[in-house]
Image (cartoon, rainbow, N blue to C red; front, side, top):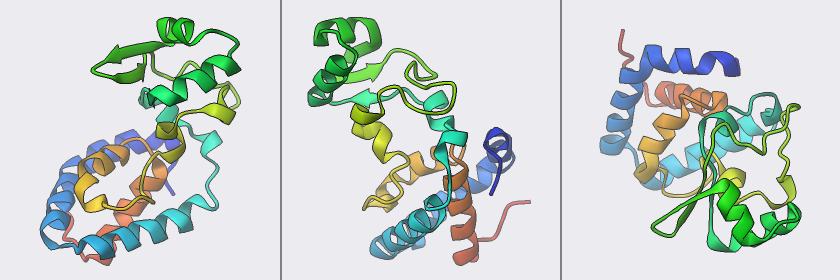
Length: 167
């Protein structure tokens, strides 16, 4: 598997190929079969991968919170929900997005300061074990720029589909 520090450069070298493969999947993949393939690869690759040694997702994305996820974090941080929002959150159109990136809750050792109450957007990333992947291929391609595991999944799927690589 590719090193976390090298995934962005590797993505940049094959970006056009990844977007071409996305288009190929949109036109040729069976939705249910693709979900099964992603789920199988997700389980296979994440079982032995230590995300705390990478945390590219915490460095590149801004976490999003649902309204009901704000209170548990603010209680954990011993502040009011309003103070939490004021200090850490941008609120637009009912969305609650962390103001900063990298994530201010990322600890030096790769852990998460709010692990016990972190939002589902963090828990579920990169969403490759969720259904309807055919309809979220754009976000998956973007994740190949960040997550070494998703990068590997996409490469394996290219092989499985015998996708003609762009030279």
